[in-house]
Structures are given as C-alpha cells and as structure tokens.
Amino acid sequence: MSGHGEAQPMTARKSGPLSGTAAVPGDKSISHRALIFGAMAVGETQITGLLEGQDVLDTAKAMRAFGAEVTRHGLGDWSVHGVGVGGFREPADVIDCGNSGTGVRLIMGTMATTAMTATFTGDASLRKRPMGRVTDPLSLFGTRAYGRQGGRLPMTVVGAANPVPVRYALPVASAQVKSAVLLAGLNAPGETVVIEREPTRDHSERMLLGFGAELHVEKGTEGHIITLKGRPELRPQSVAVPRDPSSAAFPVCAALIVEGSDILVPGVSQNLTRNGLYITLVEMGAEIDFQNPREEGGEPVADLRVRFSGNLKGIEVPPERAPSMIDEYPILSVVAAFATGKTVMKGVKELRVKESDRIDAMARGLEACGVRIEEDEDTLIVHGMGAGGMPGGATAATHLDHRIAMSFLVAGMAAQKPVSVDDASPILTSFPIFEGLMKDLGATLERG
Ligand code: S3P
Image 1 (cartoon, helix red, strand yellow):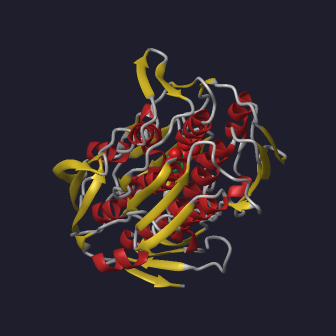
Image 2 (tube, rainbow, N blue to C red):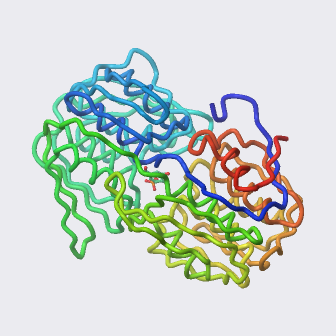
C-alpha cells in the first residue's frame, strides 16, 4: 500500500484540547515475530491483537509463500499453522516485503539455513536500505546472497544446505540483525551465540523461550551473550500482542504539546528495551502518570494519563538510551521544538538508515516550520521555541516514512499555522487507524 499507490497529502491544524482514550493497535515488532515464530512451530499458533498494518500483512503473505497456513479470523485475530524449524518450502515467486526492514531481515534469517533459494524485494524506501548488516553474519552459516550494489534489494538468498553454528558480536545495536542471526541459528546444529554490547529490544528472545527453544542470556562486561541451541521443536503458542509503544508515542506527544489536553493511553509497554522515550519525556518535565502497572502478552505495561505540559525543558538525551527509543527520535524532536532550551540527541546515526534518513527528514521539515536545527552525521540538536512557539505553515516531505508523516502531523496540531505532509499513505504500514484515532481525540486533520 505505502509508496505503491498515489501520494496522499494531509494537513494538521491547531487542535484541541485533546481528550479521551487512545487505544493504539498491536506492537509491530511483536506482530512480525508472532507470525514468523508461529510459522516455525509444529501445529497451530493463535494470535490476538495482531497489528493489521501493511508491514505485518506483507510478512503474513511471505509466511504463506514459504508454506505456512496463515488465516485471519477477525480483526487482529489470526492463526498460523507452522511447518516446523527447517520446514519452509521454496517460494514460487519473489517475496515483496513492502516498506518493512524488520520483515525482510527477519525472514532472510529464517530461510538462511534451509536449502532453498528466495528472492526479496520491497518498495522504493526498502530498496535503498542496507542488507549487508544481515547477509554478512548469515554468510558465516554458509548462506550466500546476491544483491544490488551496496547490498541492496532486490536480493537473492541461497540458504545453506549444511549450516554451521555461528558466534557473532553485533557491530551495530540492531534487534533486526540479532533476530536474523537467532532465527538462522534455529536450523543450525549446535549452539549459535549472539553478543550485543548495548541491549536492543528483546522480543525475539522472549518469544523463543515462549515457543520452547533452549536459550539463555548471560549479562557480562561484554554486554549480553545470547546462546541458542539449534534444531528445537518449537511448540505452538497463544500470543496476545500488546499495544505498540512506538505508536502510543504519537497521541502521548500530541497531548503534551496541544494546550489543555488530558488523555489516557492504555497498555503502553514499560519493557526497558522499548521505553526510552517515556523516560526522556519525564526528564523534560512531561506530566505523565504511569497507572495500573501489570503484565499483558508477556510484556510489562502501564496506562498512561498524559496532560498538556506547558513547561517542557530541553535536555541532552544519553546516547546509550538510543536503542530503547530508536524509532521515537522523530516525534521527540517535535516535542523538543515545543520545549524551552535545546534538546541534544547524540549517537543517533542509525536514524540515517531507517525508512528514510530520519535526521535529514526531521531537520529539513522542522526548519521549514521555523525551528532552528543543528546536525551532524550522528547528532540532531533542536532549539526549542517553547509551548505554542512553533510557527508551522510548511509542508514536510515524508520520504515514504510513516514516522516522519505522523511526527509532522502532530507538530501541526500545536503549531501556529497548519503543517502538511506530502504523503500520509505510509502511515498505513504501522498505524492504520491513526487518522480516526487522532480525530476522535479532537485533532483537526484534513486530507489534502
Ligand atoms: C525493530 C528493530 C529496530 C526498529 C524497527 C523494528 C525490530 O530496527 O527501528 O522499527 O522489530 O526488531 P534496528 O534493528 O535496525 O535498529
């Protein structure tokens, strides 16, 4: 859907106050993994709360192409009849992962240690993104990959017929790379070991344990040493997908900057590998109450009561926090524009290889809205203009990036003049109900 159809411009006007409950959809990372691990189990996995965004639908389609039976029973209610570890069949056609880096990288890992060949492609955004970070470690198993210059899609991956187990220290803090290696390790004999210096989202590890794999994590001076025993028989599970904290970030941040707002966002993950934004917002002076802490779908969650916060202060975000909020820097940079003082985001060069170069996309769009920005390869600095201080009155280019589109629409809800985006259609990849949900809270969003 995203990037394949016509561009869908959208405009946000000064809104609010925002009020009510923002029930955001299922977690994208966990939804991809539920489908993929379900496909690797023997028998039927039931999933509730699955995100029906285009990224996840593309992964569902890919799992069917590799031989799993994937069935939709109702909204968010799905089942996967898995083929077992090593049971994938060779797909008859090219696998199109659309806009999804997580989809393509995890699926490459999953097929990499089975004797078969698969060709992967994606939309114009995904075809620009580097795949070498995954195919390099996969080559250690004996997998071969042939792509375009710079390791770009389309790419043909030849799975290893006789894989060997691997010990791999991640050169970048990436849950996608970690997960691809673990998924490949599932069908290798012996023990596959992944070492990560900085902890990244741990959904694959949690889910592997849930599906009955033998996995242990040792926390040492080197970081986390994750050891997985190959060739387990994965047992099908009932997976209740919790809400997506990366989607919750948009109504939460909108309420913080739109005057008079007071909203409730239920079930926001407090998983330490995902909650960096919320810690940062509190440090900036955000009025957020974390209510009713509990566990949902195996994740620690809380209900967030969020109120307009007119005295936000710019801070320096610790670089070691980046992996736990990597997808949230675009919306944080919008909040920073409504704070006083500067917000310094260092150690964020991974943002340059997301669905778009997010440092560049945010810097150019915020500058067009009248905000002073400084940037270098690894840093973004936003000079805040205080509550209600952003002039707005600009159109931001979204570069097929859902989070850039949603960030600028949130900016427009609090800026003095409207803010438009050239294409809101990528929002469908991760947050298909964004427009309706934000309007129900009181946001003024218009097509065009
Ligand atoms: C994801 C990992 C992150 C994140 C992406 C989802 C995942 O990417 O940006 O949206 O589900 O594993 P990296 O692993 O490249 O940091």
